[in-house]
Length: 308
Image (cartoon, rainbow, N blue to C red):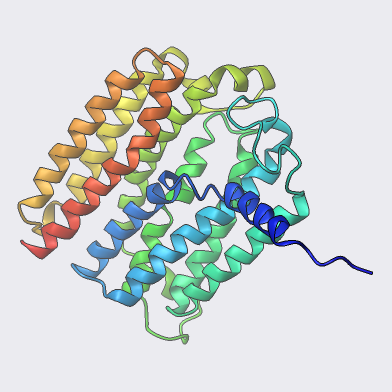
């Protein structure tokens, strides 16, 4: 006879699943959200409407959560040797590989359901985005700077936003040409420059675990860049901010945009003082504060369209 699960057991599993998807650490999904929302506003040339806003906010949270499940399964043998990750649910054995994959698949299906309320072009780009997400955890084994792969994955909300706004409504255009045509060159430029922001903050993140990663043979940008890590991070911030400024120069954004760029630049300079001594605490703090930099850029875009 099968025993009925006790309420406390259900609550315990629920807490483990919340730990699995990093529910108590929203910085991860915020780093995904801000460039996607910025692109949504640029594509719509202002307010995109409640439907698109809801789909992209919920979809971002769901896909980041699903990505955590995939990443933890892929890295479970490595994570047990890293101080910061040794107690993650999959690594510690509290959640099985099968459970983690099922949770990740369920969350991804929910995100897919949201995309199905949009158009064919967005769905086609979302399939490619999922592919990049699946590749990233394994890139750390072979790519010298896997943060570049993460940069593509974390920036794919940008072309999806343009496809959602500018793609043909409905489900008639299933060909790749139509999906490609819905995403202008400007969107790919925003993605390319956003990749440098991801390189900046994820290199800060990698600096936290550099000693452990060297010991277990993991490849990261912090290891590849070596003593040039701090200089490279500051360079990445400059390329990101200047690139977005150049691409949005003709959008006739109002006073809020230059103010936001100034504020974002000041935050990047503050990060230099946090990471210059390469302490774990300073680098981790810099990483976690990056979502404020992204929020500042988004605020500049949104307010710039509202008050041109």
